[in-house]
Length: 129
Image (cartoon, rainbow, N blue to C red):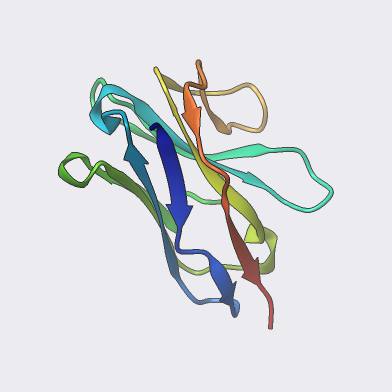
């Protein structure tokens, strides 16, 4: 059975950190590029980060650059998003998507994937004081 499950979200205060994880079962994560996306209340989905399967190149939404780090552990079939210095604008549901290739999209320099092959249900992050 194919599954893609995110974890690690929760309520935090501004300035704190979280590490999100998405674990795949039923398919091999190293065959795919992995993107983290966010949907905030009342807003459209936006790309946050992406790691390309071809060369490991990483992409970040400009507001996440320097604060977030995407990584992958193929042996664990898991991808991660380390988020430091969180602020209320980071609040939303984060979900990961497995696709073919990452690129920088035309909208605000957000990363994007050219295909959406597998995706999870998301994990909620809430940043407030």
